[in-house]
Image 1 (cartoon, helix red, strand yellow):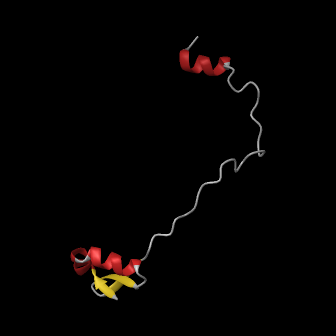
Image 2 (cartoon, rainbow, N blue to C red):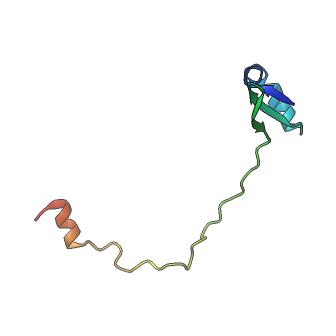
Image 3 (cartoon, one colour):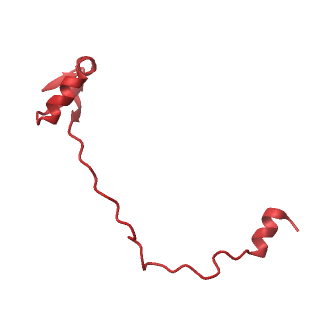
Length: 75
């Protein structure tokens, strides 16, 4: 089914329901197809610890650096 934008604005709920139930809905502008209305596909869950073991955190990561302190706070 091809629907122009102005008609799609007026019938959005109906078109969403049609797409949800498997019908192909194409939204057009001046009878030129622009987009397909499709059902949302979840992306899945994130994987925690994906980079585990790829790098090590140095023991002195929280130590202050005198040069950086000088840049921020002066002498």
